[in-house]
Image (cartoon, rainbow over all chains, first blue to last red; front, side, top):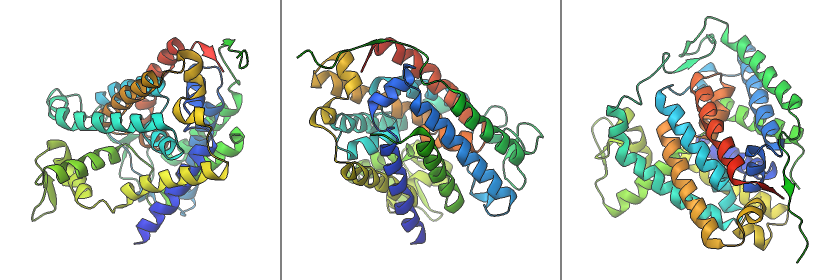
Length: 196
Length: 183
């Protein structure tokens, strides 16, 4: 029961924040990906950095249970699937989470995204054995690994560096990049709004 | 209209942190599979079955990892599924509180309209095809922007970095080619 309450509380917060930062708006996603407005990229980098510093800092202070970490396996399909997700993300302007939030905010195109998504997920369920037998899902570089070795974690480290310290250093680096990133990298012709 | 990036970034980071501290890292795309499973099992009962040790399925993907997904399909009132439903509610309440979206924005986003015009069919078709590719890719990768990229890189997981490299490696060129006009 407690986990259901947490699911509701955390879900509400996540959905609301995604809406407020503009992540559920395909225009902001598009502007980030065509490098004309990096506001959302700064938000993503700052969020990863903040989350990292808080989590590893909390672990070092003994306030956060290392056992709550959940590291995914590295395999070739992660990269191939990432390419596919990236292409679809650019076309539609939604990713799985933001698509759900966007539909809830009244975007009708997001309903089509979810429909296509359910079909795509079903297509993967059916074709999964082929990817598996082709070896695309076989783990690489140790599979479930973190960049450093995190004290008390069930995951192996890619390096022997102290994983919690490395996590904080990388977290701070993400935050620094968020601040250093310019507002835009590419300039384009602005379409005038009026003229009707 | 949107939040300042510093406040927004910190707030988003705090939500990801709270999720790991209280339960587990945030992830979304698996729930598309769970909903597919629920629908398919309703249409064709017997897709998911209970065994002495737990749950299994005639679909190899649902049956993998000792029937982890099969179990979630048979019991949708689990943390991850409720989380995604609550996410939708959170987005709904947030947009209501700021007055909702304009009618134009509800059908076609401004950037799309500036580049591809007012055809609803074109926009909906692109969203549908995009959704198909995104979720197929997310399941092949084993996670999406939330689970792999945000939660993964935050935990310094190697797979998160590989995923982000692929996702942005494709998304940026595609977007540069498609969206030449600004709004």
